[in-house]
Length: 287
Ligand SMILES: N[C@@H](CCC[C@H](N)C(=O)O)C(=O)O
Image 1 (cartoon, rainbow, N blue to C red):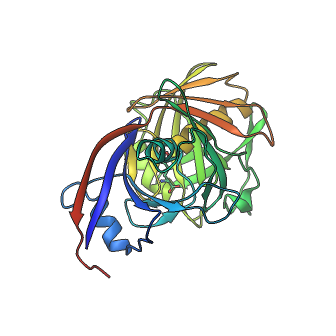
Image 2 (cartoon, helix red, strand yellow):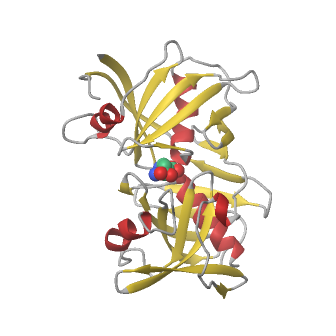
Image 3 (cartoon, helix red, strand yellow):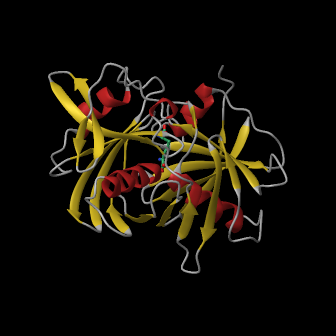
């Protein structure tokens, strides 16, 4: 099967974007893994599927698949690339669109300078909805909000737990360059307290308006940036009182700006979205 695609990235978090607005596109998990494979396929952290609006209230449907082929609820950097894609490919003239994801509605808006701002919706702190199994665990209060202990092999990671539509465990570290992202990231991702696995964030506070962040992503490993991870880290930092106002998040792939006005309010994320190239790939039938 010949599949046309567009390669994009948002702050180095890279995507294969597929247009399924005119005809449905059903790819198996193995085909998605091949598309994402950096040696045998195109290469991407996530595959984004652009679909026709599933209801009159929205402009498009948006499905997201991790490099491991699993479908997920939300992708922040992908949301910025999504609006740049539908606008750039002439699928809509609108600069602000309403998009249905698995975890709800988001509203990305293309700015005059080419950057994109996304209303990512409100963060969720209700632990069963993350989902996080806290029974029998004792949290500690740190600067006004709880952190939870995760037993790793020979170590304990204290994490703030929340959902940005997808699950996040954020820990504060002194220095992201020396943080155990590659060794602890996979252990946190697969920790039994997270029944649907989790994205593991490692946040260094530079000052009240700046953080450095690395994220070990569920289903993709460490990426150059994670949009929902940046939102989750800033929300955690604001709740703990370590941050104030709009916060610049420095990742290995670029900078994002995140703001959040408090409980029940949506998180707003601004950052870049870039086209890399268009192509087609001959995808074999893979069950
Ligand atoms: N790169 C993303 C998040 C993609 C999904 C994530 N790995 C998950 O499994 O929840 C972003 O920019 O938010």
